[in-house]
Length: 241
Image (cartoon, rainbow, N blue to C red; front, side, top):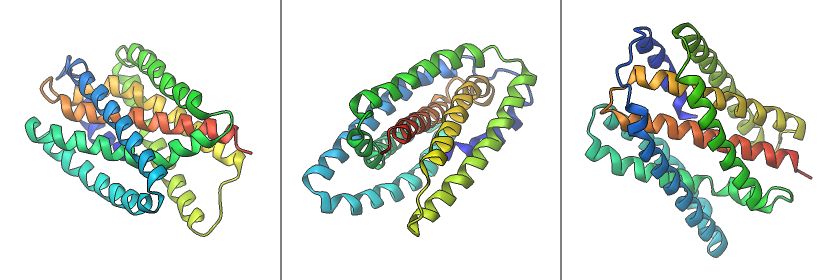
């Protein structure tokens, strides 16, 4: 959900309607792919810790979550200043930590009848299909439609964040979301981040120069990680006992 902070600045910069980085997405794609691979490795390591040292998992999960939040802002700030040599290892570490914090969700998916490895693969495939469609749509949006979609996604992000915080607070008091509401929240998240994927292809070339590929890669990485999470949550909700 961290990429919600990019939208307001993106709208302001996109008002010029000029492409400042026509090749920035192409330059960013190898780093997006590398980040996703590192995330998978982080999750694999987390599953190993959960299986072999379950008492150690929760303390390390909390530490990883805190470090992930701090590292996001540090890495993004360094990347936007153009210091790619420093930003790259920070973003690589951030990707690994993100994978570790996804361990719990992946473990639930693996343990849910009807989801399992096939469901995880389906969620990943859904992200890939979204990328293909979003690239075609987002690259051809008019300025009016692009800015309108960006504002809509921004408002949706805020609403989703409020709902997720409320869901977390209720869970702390032992009140868990009914299945039909979880399906609704997850479906909204899928729809919203599919829209964010389209927005990326419109906004990023107007927001970043070609040599600013790392902050662009971070924005795209966040979009597809969140899309993957909500597709997986939706599959789990549909198959919940």
